[in-house]
Amino acid sequence: MRASLFITCYNDTLFPETGRAVVRLLERLGVELEFRSAQTCCGQMHANTGFRAEAFSQAKRMVRLYADAEAVVVPSSSCVAMIRDQYPGLMEELGNEGLREQFKALAPRVYELSEFLVDKLGAEDVGAYFPHRVTYHASCHGLRGLHLGDRPFRLLKNVRGLELAPLANLDRCCGFGGTFSVKNGEVSSAMLTEKLEDVLATRAEYCTALDNSCLMHLGGAMHRQYAPMKTIHMAEILASTQEEVRG
Image 1 (cartoon, rainbow, N blue to C red):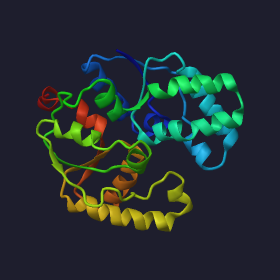
Image 2: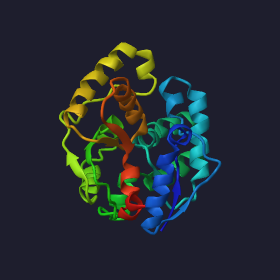
Image 3: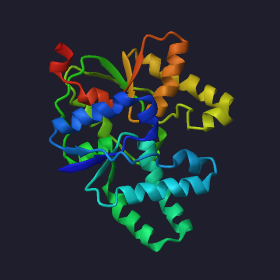
Image 4: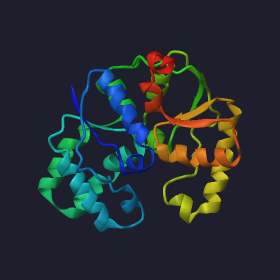
């Protein structure tokens, strides 16, 4: 099948290795992948901080850019949650019936990465190899917004060599929340401290997630504490193969 990669502005500017991993993974699974270079941002940070005009602009651009896409794959549950949860309201406010109909047609074709793999491709074993002890952090958008459920675990359990370490208080937020961590720094730090205690208690080598925003927040705290753990987006684990590790 054919799919378009919406890499997100966050990944593009800060974590380009995630996008490269998604490309390797999906092409290995036989997906004909395209990248539309006119893409920018989903508009989440604008909408969440009250800049409605800027959010309208990004939403319109997104819908029009992918109107004819067979499927849109997004390696960020927060961006997919923005599209599903906030775009309908934005479209109503705009009052553009044509654009609203375009969005309704596009919405069912927008997938978070684990949804695309499990629900669209029917692939739980993607041929990955990652010989490390790993714990999984469920981001709030993935857990509560998209209801990803056990999809991430089904994918990780089929990775050869991977030892999955259960994380206590899985539903606990890491405290990032985009601009929340800036506007409410003390609260965010307190939440991060509690979350990090649970993450480090797993004694995993890596903490993975489907949102690099959470991983950046957690990774910064690990770095400041000289913690012997690294963060890695799940796409990078799933893209890893035994041949690559040997190489």
